[in-house]
View (cartoon, rainbow, N blue to C red):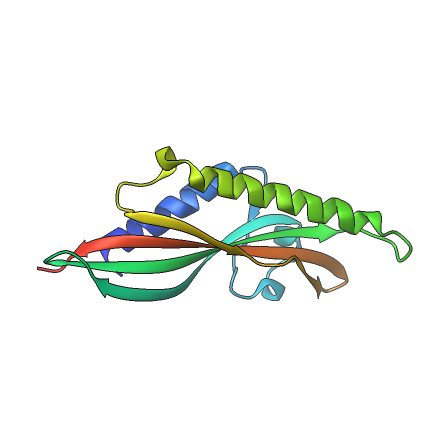
Length: 150
């Protein structure tokens, strides 16, 4: 990795840790089921997705990286209780709003970042780890970084 992508990756980890300071960081955001349920109860993670290169100005190469923010919450419920899902889904949407609000604020952009585009936030999805129910969603943050290649 280049110096800039390493700096931006570390910057996102730091900012997400601050933004979601009451949440756990997911150790393996690439496979949620492979994490301890204790980390997943109210958590966030960062995955590095795809990357595209395109030539920019003379002697510069721009790279677009897709960072994927994973938000996860436990659903404590009983078979007859539909409101527990409602409560968790609304809380996750509030988390997503907080995330988008933060990255829409240009004062929060690291100087190594040329451009941020907030992509799609996926639907809220369900999975079971052990005997525990979880909901999760993902938001893509497309980030353009310009590298000097001379």
